[in-house]
Amino acid sequence: MNLSIIQIPYDCGQHAERMGRGPIHLIDRGLADSLSGVGHDVHPVEIGLGSGLRTEMSAAADLQRMVFRSVTEALEEGRFPILLTGNCNTAALGTVAALESIGRPGTTGVLWFDAHGDFNTPETSPSGFFDGMALSVLTGNCWDALTGSFSGFTPVPEHNVVLIGARDLDGPEEELLWGSAIEMVSVEAIRADGAAGALGPHLDRIARRVSHLYLHLDMDVLDPRSLRANEFAAPGGLTLALLAECLKIALARLPVAALALTAYDPETDRRDRGIEVARTIIGTVVDGLLGAHELQRKSG
Image 1: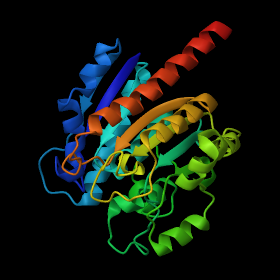
Image 2 (image 1 turned 45 degrees about the vertical axis):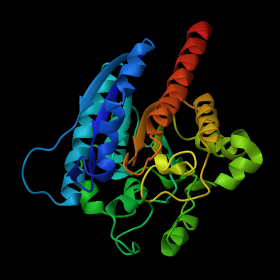
Image 3 (image 1 turned 60 degrees about the vertical axis):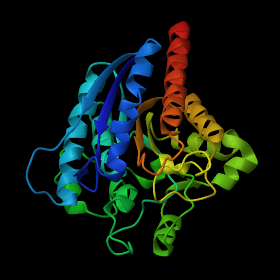
Image 4 (image 1 turned 180 degrees about the vertical axis):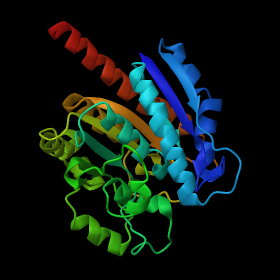
């Protein structure tokens, strides 16, 4: 399969700091080589900012524009885009804008795997952490002036988003989520009903409105016993096996157009499990895509 591995090694606008080290670490540990080794055609892309002073928000906006160009180029070349990024807010807008540019606006569904809601706004966030607003920005609930300057971006309707695995929420953020049209799937529901029972009905509903999915996977959706992805990791997360089941259910329901792995800090990963986890996630998605292509070829 033709793949583009797009690295965005930034955290809070800083290069190769904290979670910004994650993409570099995964590539250094042989992620791209392992994909090439099993027969995939891998095209590596590294996104970087030039010199000069930037605020965190202006850096994120510039990175998103570069992501848009890189994802668009991958799609035009027939490559599946896989994004490795330090922050959620440096991948989602650019990726969705690129996907929407090749289809009809409003046809991208989003599966957002995360221990956190990422649904704060500047008014609700107790820390002001911009990355904790990523899903709120993506759905048009804050930073309108910033996203309005981003050519090609249309906010994703809340009812086209499924938030999976969130368990560490700020109080006002939780109220915003419950008052939104975002569909939420808890870890407890997945454990109790299985991935098909817990996630399947949500996918069936959004499949009536969208034509493809963007899989956004913050690696702290996993329980710290499976992977301590970053300093914000919270107990009670998914096992890697349950996460893989969720991905398989999604792939069986709708075409997946892009995948992002975010928020991995190798410094907190004392057992160096990140590379194994990344290989499993990407392998599950790529195998699902190849299976879908083969079924389509046989039926066509």
